[in-house]
Image (cartoon, rainbow over all chains, first blue to last red; front, top):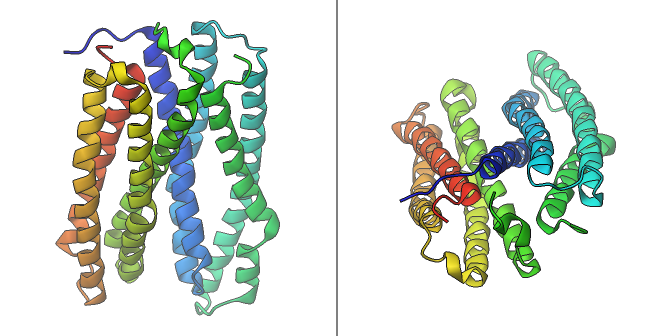
Length: 161
Length: 154
């Protein structure tokens, strides 16, 4: 029924698996973050932000899988490491990872505040609401997602290849 | 090495992108559903909230993503005529077509779990089935993306 699978195709599978972990994890993190933004009680916000940790594990694993197997694929498929679309993808990967890491650290501080407020009576807090809607945090998190989406565009269209 | 990897016509790029966007959102949505459904069973004080969010995720993320993924698949297959009878396309369509039923079943079960938790049953059987069925579906999606990328038998 099935024929042999080449080294290139196994590497592509590992690379795409990384992409599913990375982008799937980002989608899940966005689901939890948007749900948290719509809540007022600190205990519920803390709970939903704590769920993002499972998504972050997928995102981190996916980031490394895509990079390692992506670079391996460049060699296997005889593309050049200096090709414009590959350089652009690596630059976007670095920017996206850095933005995601910075946004994640700010979200962790928001979760800690929510946990403290939950333990102190669980009343809605203007400070917590403002922290959740902090433009820089949102820009970092969604900017990271946009960078990953731009990488997907490069991977599909491969401009200049 | 597959020569197709290098000579994919430009006209296939947009359908492939649409298919991939749908597939990534589908996997992310199913993963989020599993996390929410597991959370609902473990943190019973928030079971009602998490069950409701699992249902909303299925309706607002998983179902639309499934449609986008499936439309993209059909679009690219219309351009990739030679692949219509391939084993790997068969695997993809099998997972996709059964997946449509699974998504409908998951939404019905999540709706029931949400109603049960609101009624005071904090660990309904339907919630456990959502966890199991969604996990099984995620594994099936992994088989599909293995078939789509390695194209065995092509």
